Length: 113
Length: 110
Figure 1 (cartoon, rainbow over the protein chains, first blue to last red):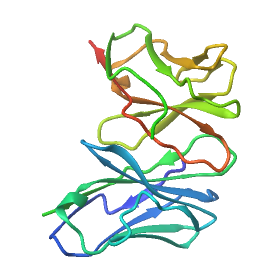
Figure 2 (cartoon, rainbow over the protein chains, first blue to last red; figure 1 turned 180 degrees about the horizontal axis):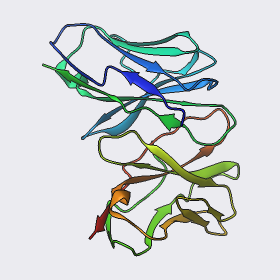
Figure 3 (tube, rainbow over the protein chains, first blue to last red; figure 1 turned 45 degrees about the vertical axis):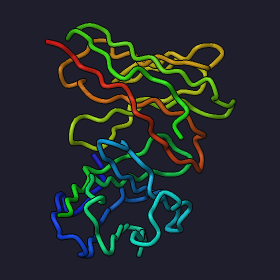
């Protein structure tokens, strides 16, 4: 089965460091989402792209987070500088607009100490 | 904001049918009802969706009321592997984003 690949699987970093998470969407999918999940807030939408263009990033703290799609096979989510409150699991999902259901990756578990 | 209402948690005996309700009274005519689930430590997984007719696939059945204000996800023969958080969402199929609520935590009891 085709899958969304996220790297790294786990990341532990010190406060103030830059963190980059990567996502390889399913080949042919033109829509990519970034979500963050914590126990307190549940699944929160951070940003999403269609055909590599950002459609909505209102869920993202603008001062420290940035999301890009350098090409159709790679989406990145960057945090600079990272803070302990950024500790969460970050999920990427991809889909094809106009079709049914999106596929999620296994997530990146980020711990900022 | 999530626009659906689901029970916080439910229990179901293994081998029995699990019936998970969802209220979506603000659903509009062109919005679909989708169900996803999230097994511990994994990403959410698409289960099924529907517009107005009942739907069935290899994972589950979806029953949507005639007024479309509520639906029920049915897992016909629940197994321990069905223990997960189940999310009910409604949105337009095209050009739309998924906003997750809190979902229902389903415990399958041996």
